[in-house]
Length: 281
Image 1 (cartoon, rainbow, N blue to C red):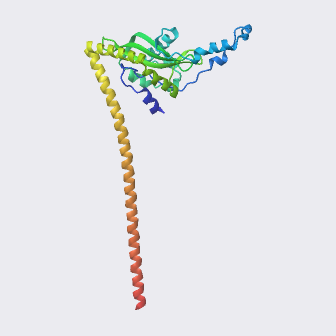
Image 2: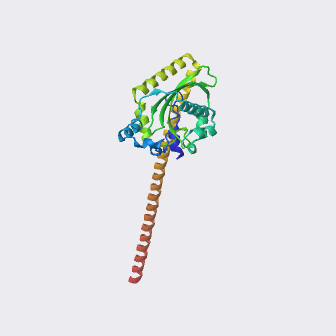
Image 3: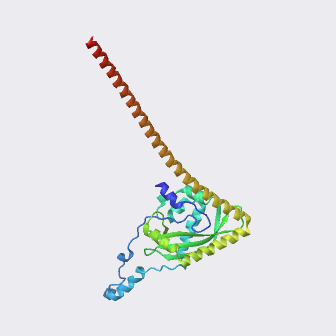
């Protein structure tokens, strides 16, 4: 299980799109429509036509990307990003959907050189359920010993928890994955990605330290991926070699057994010949 989540949280590039925040988690949300009641008994005479109109908005969520300054969304993202940078597991446990999936070392490694963030801008797409959002948030990170801020874009999925507060969704869910894959390819999101990447390139061009840092980060990421591939190849080769050795051992044992049988048969033959000669005499 740990390997699966490590693959999900794997560090790709800290400042190019989606800096390792795209956690996918199994989650459940309550059917809020089923718990709704009329505020007043005299409203129970509402027509069927009006009832259809009331549920229609949740049946057709807005899949367009739009800037969002909703207080609860902003505070959730600020708490999550701030706690991630500080590796504050207590705070993180309050803002994610499943704290049991948090791996402290992942955050220590990922944000080892990040000191703070500024200039937060949040963009959202309506999620699969009422009270859920696919969030793309722009931020500029302060890197240790580097003056120029590094622009970045992170994607998270927010759900409403049992306590009524928004949580960063952690785990696996096929429908959420499909929504993310579709949304990432929309012109609006692609334009946002291009804008952020352009800002990052400009920042790196203006600051040699930032450029070197990003180059080293990319190289380390590539080396890490290659190391994983090599480890898997070595493991496969090792298994194949072990199986070959086992087969060779079995063949050798079989050959030894055959030799012993042949020797036994020769001995039996010689004994038979000796007995025949004695009888003849």
